Image 1 (cartoon, helix red, strand yellow):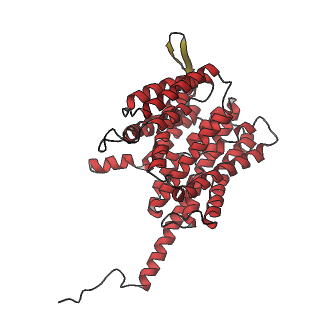
Image 2 (cartoon, rainbow, N blue to C red; image 1 turned 30 degrees about the vertical axis):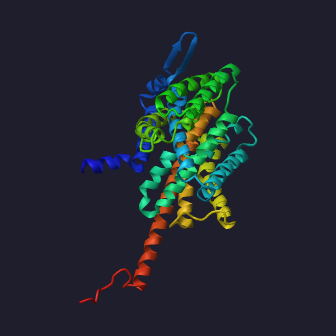
Image 3 (cartoon, one colour; image 1 turned 135 degrees about the vertical axis):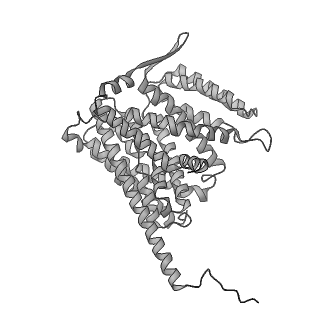
Length: 410
């Protein structure tokens, strides 16, 4: 294998999914083996930052979930801005299909979860858990069977997942916010105003934005609003264009620079810290608890049902068309991949519940629903590829001379 091939392998979406699978497997092993106590102690180890009277002290688990995940959301914000200005969300023709598909894919699983947990008000707080899609995992699974899917389907899945993340961010801000500190929110708002002023003044260097963004993160964290929102807000303020026409884009430079750190550090560490499911404390009733079933069925059934129903409605009324080269079997496969909730579902589950038994049920539902969704998506995309190959072979038999012409020129 050449160095170039090795580099391309490590940049591939399939490897991303593999890394997250390994991180989740290690978490399961650590939480159930002889290292179980050390795993728990590691996550509960306190760490603090203190500047004068301003102090932030949290266990490592929350530093990962509140701190490192802010970097992940910062990258999502950069991708979102780029897609809105230059990419698949830059016009209504391009954005209509993924927007409505994502809305359907959030609404139906939430309704399934709510229906199964309606009798338990304490469990209803987790309604948003199955509404989320894991971008990295979903694209990783698609890459495993990418031979059977047109490139347009990867773009469609990425657009749906990004819009899905916007919805998750809004849900976190509106429904998973603790008691608010008006003073800290005022400081955070001042920081956002300063970022806007830098942008309007034409400041193109990224470092001032990042420094101010770090301060906004601290203020938002202390305000009671979830701190990961600071990452998105900061990203949206990063300039798209350089100072001169041929200068590199500050936004794209940051995006490319952060991508390997998020893929190889942030997301695997989050998966390792949050996927630990203690089987010793897992009772048989947990398998069929309303929370477990609500999450698993919401992901495995609700996500693809919502995505396909909304997409079919938009195509039927003429607001959008299927992606180039795709058919409804391709769409069904990609819709199944949206049921891979993993990172975002575990993240929202941690915000919704603090009880250990409830979190175990959430993890069980997320792992079961995500795995089933991934396998179903692979099977459907593979089947779509097989049918496309068979149809191509039939056409070739009917037109054996097509694409091959013997010149008669002398």
